[in-house]
Length: 432
Image (cartoon, rainbow, N blue to C red; front, side, top):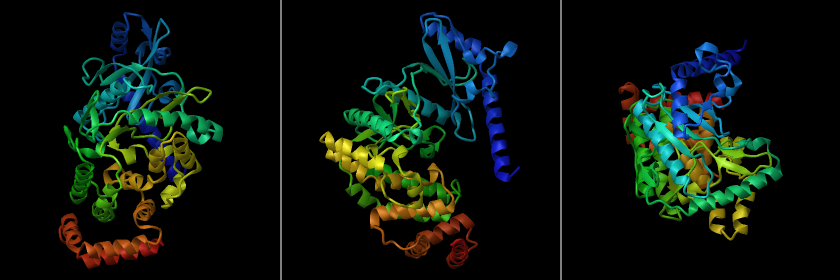
């Protein structure tokens, strides 16, 4: 077995083991009783338990369970005698990912977001109950409506099917535009903007950045927070490169802010890669799900193209070329007389790249990192920008005082800047 195969086999085994540990904690009899009480005392059953025997626990190996399990939650169907189906959304309590208090904040925000959206013309699951207390069934959970349809697999759809989905998605954009917010952050309760709930925004288990009334305040605070995490060693992957690229962002922040076209903020899905959209067999959208980590963002970013439309390979190579679908999506708004939103789609790369891979959101391998940053530079400075290594060396010299202080903090003062640059430059030239 190759190392790659062994790694993924071990990962899959660990994932199933963690899932089984979660399921073993849950009191499914209590869950059924609560669901029945909330649904006018209509009896219910849990299909995942049908073959569980005396243990009365779902099997983490079963396809029925695995198909509805994501990175943060496991969704279990609850079927009532009157034909209604709910989902019990069981949250993984994983302290190595986020502390309990932070996960509770995220869950409350998701509920608030769904309640807000339920007052719009956007179809989302209705939330019937949620609890952050483990004492009820053994783990935090949420009871919500199960919408019809299946997750959209964008890459599998034909051009005609994609067009049909995009026309409906344009309606969703225009509906979201009707509901501006005065601040940027995540919804803490229906219609009220609170602190951000993305994991890298937390400054402590119970405190996160935001809300902010201006975009300048928000982006400055986020960049400063991430620079502090890099300096403190919390974000150690490609630390020097991350530090320098964050200084670049701070330097170019005024240019980005000058391109903002609106002082309000609009709700944006945090993971719009396609499977957040539910469709029927005719590609009619039946609902939009997974609003965890959603936030209110500046209009230029909120109404830029969803990442499912990006030409991913070209994007990671540093190209800012738009996909055919992105051009088509922009044309849909032009036909509706909304040239302003069309331009946000056509000119959205600078915003997408500026916010795409901040340090806390996950650091890609070096080659991807350098290519992605080169793409960011091109979106601001044009195509003639030179190599990443040339930029890196120049940035180290230009920001010499900040860079030397950063290296002293990170290495305990044991290396001189010239030696660091010499070693790193040699390593990177060997990669070329």
